[in-house]
Length: 468
Image 1 (tube, rainbow, N blue to C red):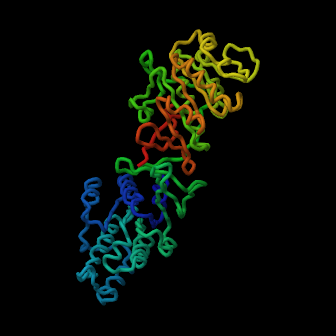
Image 2: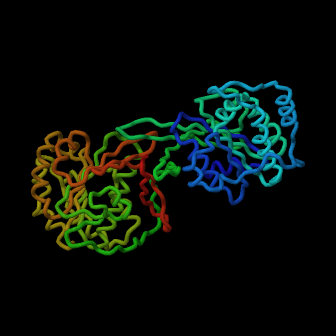
Image 3: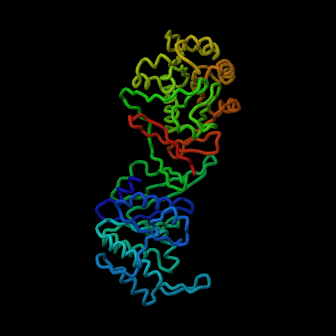
């Protein structure tokens, strides 16, 4: 939410409209943001849902109220005075709603309390929030445009305060035109999952950059933003933290975060397992996740002395990263493949005729003679197709049957390979792109947006944000 802090930290007061259809997360976003900045911005929140106890319990500070009858001496009140006079003269007038006479004068102390609050915090860049401006305006038969412009002219432009107006309607061109910032929240369904997005339509005085849309989640009843991130490995040597070696027939995935995806809720998988990374669609973010998943898993295991056989496409390059980042002693446990006649103790030469002739238990035992098990095997269907053609689909079953008991097999799979191997898998991860982000769902019921974040050594790690 740093960009919003920047927006309201500008020298002069700013106004913002937050819009979106019902259930899009407008109130949760607003309250979480206001909570995060209360230490250095006085905040005042008014809601049309005065009886919503759940909101009051989650955000107890919103119960703080000004009387609406106090003295106002420091802020500009030109529009307020005009408004109060119009109410007294009956320009707005009482009206009938649900069989009851609504007294428009009752809104005067509510508006007055906003001025009181800003007056009490003049010079401190206070923020007032109306949730929602159209509901409050409708309740008291006041045009929402008039209410917005009154607060904008007196409190924002005239007194240096900040104004947040939540809008229930999908749009109000007049309000959006006059507002300094416009933010829209939305959601849609993709792959049977609820995908939420926030778009910066306008942020006067702040650059919104080339990607104005962000994904977010409301898991746990809180606004959880997911920043765009790309995979960057540091150029310096990396000394990974040693984790405790898992049980003899378990393979570590390298990060407790993966416990969110496994049936056991742990970051290990038992020997003999098949793990499928199913690419439901392709994109840079999905490729970044696969590369990082693979690289960090391999690092975790080769530093424990476990052997790895890598039969994947160069798009998921790991060898170059390991060569730059790790001490050479660890690479003795890492074997790659090449479609060539190369003779190298750390490379398996693929003839490209029959997969099992090139990769079988006898060859593996020779190549990994100095490594301990269970071994880790990585295959990718695009690379196997390139080397063996479509026949690899039938041939891979032979290889899996031959080597399965010696370790854990990871397969980066297209749709056809997934259909072939799914029934034999222990874990199946569906990977897909959403607005430039990567997302994952597993055999479990939850789905997650994927964020790549550097640790204290600047090494990239995975963070999963539950989609809700």
